[in-house]
Image (cartoon, rainbow, N blue to C red):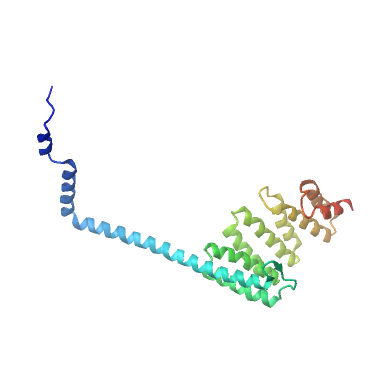
Length: 235
């Protein structure tokens, strides 16, 4: 059986770590240019990626500031006091002024989160100013950008339905309200049924009207539309 090495012998043996460092240094001398080139390339890539992220964040920041100002302006024409709704409805000119603010954000920062929120407000304001074709265009754009998110999808489809109703295209309006009503994950389904009932009533389609209102009575007893729907079904 071999005897264990003495402490002196162990100390005289080359340190494995130092050997590795020495070999690495020698390798570095031989391939200095290649290593420098590789490191330089890596640094360029890192700087490029950082630059994209940096300027993207800067764009997000600018968009957020612009959105904050636009929302503040919008709020100022809707409220006299932060807690009290303005009893006097905003004028078309006031709506147009704030609409321009949201449009600027969409044009400059449309791909940012703030830009997408601005797009929704812009679409709403197009509807409120009765620019229905532009509203439909903006809502469809929002559907592409935000339609995969359930909470936004219902709002966008609702906006499209109201815009088509504004154009007197009741068939299209019904189509979009039905999309909300038939989507198991949709929000505002009771409102969609109410709007379907309302449109069917205006078109003289009594049977379809009662079917829509009856869905509220049977499925949404807590809905704000419940009592009115109940009257329509009974009438």
